[in-house]
Image: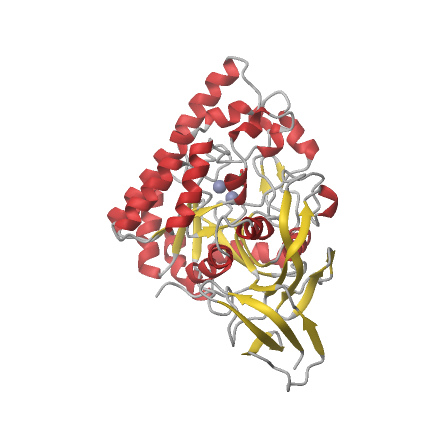
Length: 456
Ligand code: URP
Ligand code: ZN
Ligand code: ZN
């Protein structure tokens, strides 16, 4: 045996129990009440600690050209930070360039990712140019192991947006080939009109980023996307849901029996639009923006009711000097924030404080993304036969997030000063220790591309 983790309390999405875990060749090969008779090269004592499956961050933008620059965490830095935050799998967005095939897009990104990734990874390909060939290729891409795709209802100027007809075509085809479509839902025309009005009136602070895309701008697009998914009877995954009305629409559709999944992000569960009034408000500029308290309350309610399926980060950070481009004009601030190292510790701290159960955190941050995106049971749980992607969590450790104790390449964090009740002691990626006591111990190039299953 390579390793035995002893005396810990195992937390899965459904169960909490005390047991030992034996690991060999990167897999969990035994779980038992007391594995005392088994020889192992290493014994790890986890008395008083929780043993959780590594988190899956199903929404990252690493090294991604965006906002007139490239997001500040490379594949190496972003997955290093992931490992230090208990994330053992990331799903990164690969943006299709005009004329490119879907597999070609993913393989192009993989050239950057493979030599550098510290944890396992997969790609969602964002479709920006739907040709006849691409429509056909969706089937091949699913067989290749890429079973989820993204469409943007916004970012027209950036060349990422698809129109309503294209989106419906993709939804229809996704059903035939067993793919899942993820959507960024906001109304682009409303945003453009409001931006124009604000800039003309000299209203240029980050607060107007929020006001250019307030609750109803996101809600309308959520409703439209859900309406199409229902009409076409296609499954749909809404990324970074941040508003109350959209949450209610998701709930309604799910109650009617439709396969609609909603993802939200830790930043929407912790911050509100008040951040845009702060001096450092531009650091919080992301799309959709943080919303009002009512929306935040609705998201927590959605977590309780099971209508939020996953939590992911939308990790897309930029350096301060890049955020500063928008000092006098919010439209020049590259959109995106950090969170890859903060998601699991934040959610687990909320559980430790009694807001939700640890099992629910595991469900949202690990088990559900693995199931929804086709990599369970290898990922997303602690079970015999699963990858030994494991987090050892100390519920008694107190931790304050600062830029200095984070592991990304970014020069600030929106989470600065946030106090957490409990923190991660160790992270294992396929049995290899990649984080311990605040130190990254992993290897660049260790992470593997995960071929995922389609939906049928
Ligand atoms: O502001 C954000 N979220 N930037 C990343 C791209 C996206 O919309 O997900
Ligand atoms: Zn988005
Ligand atoms: Zn995103």
